[in-house]
Each structure stands twice: as C-alpha cells, then as structure tokens.
Length: 392
Image 1: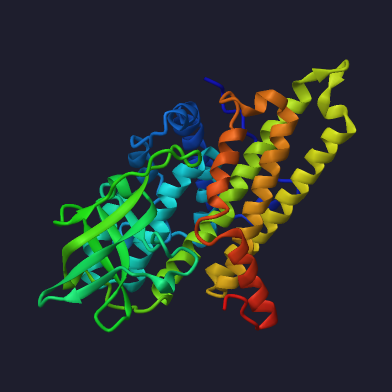
Image 2: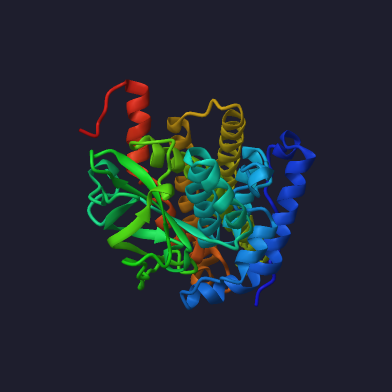
C-alpha cells in the first residue's frame, strides 16, 4: 500500500483568493481522501467495486449538496466551497467524486430547486447525510447528446401516473434509494419524477465490464408500468430546462474535479522525476521531462484561474451554462493530456497500480464524455460566440 504524499500545486498563489473557510474545508476533505480513499481505492478499482463504506464519511464531510441550506440538511456553503470539495474528491478518484456529484447536483439540486416544500423536507435531510442515496435518470439507450428525443413517458392514472421506459449509464443506480427521472407526460411535456426503490416494476440492473470508473457503481433504470404517486412529480419545472439546469450544476463540479486528477498526476510525475535516476542523474534534469512538467503546471494554473473565476460568477448568479461548458471541457482536456504525459514520465511504472496515473487516465475517458461530450461542449461554445447552431 503506497503512502499518499500529495502536495497541492499552487504556482500563482491562488490560496490568497480563498477565504479561511475555503481552506479549512479543503484541508478537511483532503485529509479524508488521504486517510480513507487513497489507501483502498486501487484495490477497489482493480476488483471493480464501489467502496460503499465511504458514504457515511462523505456525508459527515458535507460533500453531499453542500450548497443546500441548513434547513434541509445541507451546509449552506458557497459554490467555491463545493468546487474545492469536488476537486479534492476527484484527486482521490473520479468515481468517488461522481457519487458525491450525482447526489448533490443531480438529485439534491433538482429537489431543492424544483421540488415542493414537502419533497424537500422528506428527502433532502436524508440525502445530505447519505442515509438515503440517489441517482439521476436522463440518458437513454438511443438518446445521449440529444435528450429531447427521450422515449421514457408516463400516463395519467388518477392519483398516480404510470411510468415506462429505460435509462442507461446511470451512476449510483445499483444502490440508489431514489431516482430523479425525466420523462414525457401525456401532453409531451418533460417532467421530473422521484421514483423510489421498491416501487413495483422499477429495477436497476448493474453495468459490468467497464474499463473506466471501475470504483463507481453504474447501472440502468428500467420502468415497467411503475406506479408513481403524483406527489412525487417535481412541480416547479417542465421541459428540458429542468434536467439541463441540473447538468449545469454537475458540470460545474466536474470543471473543478477534473483538475484534481490533473494535479494528482502532475504531483506524482514531479516527485518521480526527482527520484528516478537514469544516465547518472534524476530524469527531472533532462530537457524533455522538464518540458512536460512545465507544460503541465502551466495548464493546471490556467485551469485553476478559470474555475475560480467561474465559482465567483456562479456565486453571484451570473455564470452562464455556456461558461460552465467551456470550463468543463477545458478541465477534462487538461486532465487527460496531463495524465498521458505523466504516464510517460513514469515509463512502465506508470501503468501499475502502485501509482494513481493509469487509473486517473482510464477514469477521465468517461469524465470527458459524460455530462456533455467533449465535442458537444465545443459546439456549445461555438454557438454562443457565433449565434449560429451547429446541432441541426
């Protein structure tokens, strides 16, 4: 079992832009990652299992919906705090961050933002502690980047509705107690429904054979004439703006989180380059190694400035979905490029579980695709700057 020696890179002294509270939160989550995640995560990734024992600690750290007010069980923190938490968790593992990100941004966020007071009081406090876990159902087998084509639907049946359809690539699905599901109603309008485990006809088969996010539980959501009480329908939103608002919150967390992977890979490669001797000196003393490391820290620093500014804008209610798309795409590209370069610095050792780099690299192949693919986010920026849509 390797020791977690991670040191946070801060080339432009961005700590000076953080409050004391931000730094306390970061140090607390970082200590949790070093103690509880780093020692076990390689083993869980190797055996493709989710470390469910972490759920209680994630709840205690406030990593589930920290932006939700204390009235509903959250910590009432700002969005920079949320970003910092996701960065620290993903530095440990993207799958663990995914679990927290789904819980906070894709389950708690829609219930808090679009739900009734009764729904908020019923679900949010238990979700905040991890006593109850949730998942988010939008992507379908034939509709990923185009959610408007969804086929999942529900019909009116008096005091309840009948839900049919399926969702796939759903993080947390195999163990989730509830699912926030988006489906078309009788008039074709998209609504959000809270579907509870145990409802007849609702199943969550697990997805096996993944080479990425192996320490995260992924599955399907299958609805076969599921009776959902009408009080479980989110009352305050309809149409795609509901799920897309959730995705903006989740993508914001990924923008911070993916940089955590990049920083971990950089830190690992830097330390290795100072210790690995070839041709009579550390490989960090060779020009090509220094080129890789210099480019890594430059891109990390640019990414840190980008997500910090995005956090300020989101806290002021001014961050646009397009700005979030740019940050998500940039952070994922930065991270996956750095992971590949870091692996080269470590040579053959870079593919082993003794180091985190190859696990990060495999995880990032999912992170660069989910919550909007790399290319779709590029086109979102293109549409925003030109005013012309390339989607149709």
